[in-house]
Length: 316
Length: 113
Image (tube, rainbow over all chains, first blue to last red; front, top):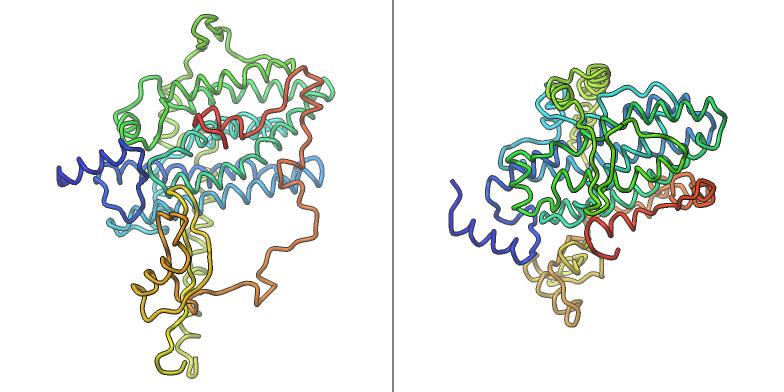
């Protein structure tokens, strides 16, 4: 149990808008919530690279291949930076990067629902950049104000790089929207596939206990529903401007409150998918991660051995 | 190093809680505690900082001495930058306007970037 006096002082710091560093004292609940959040965020960045990497060899032009490849590099880089933060926080538990990565393979950490889905056409690659990155940017922009300073600082870098992802996704979508009937149909079908997953992306209307505590600790500043409303508000007019429709007959904005009514995603189905890794692509992508992490472990170990052996050479 | 000569520490200052530590120069000091005091007196007499780092100079590996480790410059990397995508005229054709990440950040945090 945490010292109640130190906890009180900690909460006073948060109340004054002070930011917390990795080396500061913090209540164990604050630490655990951060680990859970940043671990899942980092792993989602890494798992998010898979649906996009599938499209690198199949992208229509060399410029699109370069851009998509650059994006994949960015996502993996974001994952690396975020896992470093999760590692620093996990120090009292003696868990480092290897353990945090083992958790994906053993199904002990969830990743975003959207990365369990398949991306069957080039339009899906574009819509992932347009809507999925668009949604992720809304969430990440909120976190720029997080009470945990290392997270907020890292988000500054990440959001700056996401700026290219956003323009790139819109560029692909615009090219398809300006294209032939076949291209426009392909775009519409991709939007139809991704809209419902995006409604799930921001989480349940009634937030769970953990998310509520994260608000109280100022780790995050807006509710799931706030984020979803901001997403709908930004993207519905953009999708419609392209002459595309949103696959939700209930979608309607209340002129007085500005709030959007929408059809609930299939909460049970998506929840089960992220919990059990039972989505269309969950197992295939985890298998790729397992290959990268477990089958290549000997390389990481060999580099350690080599470095040690060089240091032990006479005259080193 | 002659007797009585102190080791060199590189000095980094952090302007506010959400800023990155920035290199400001170096000082000589007998030990890390003295280095922090020296750094405070040498570099932060006027501006406020919320943190100071001192790092023994020989703990730093610099890529400048081995250019192979530097990022390649000169080739076209516009495809990696938001400015490499001129979406505004395309959105205009659809009677919509281009969106920037700065405006999203501003909406979400209530602050101007």
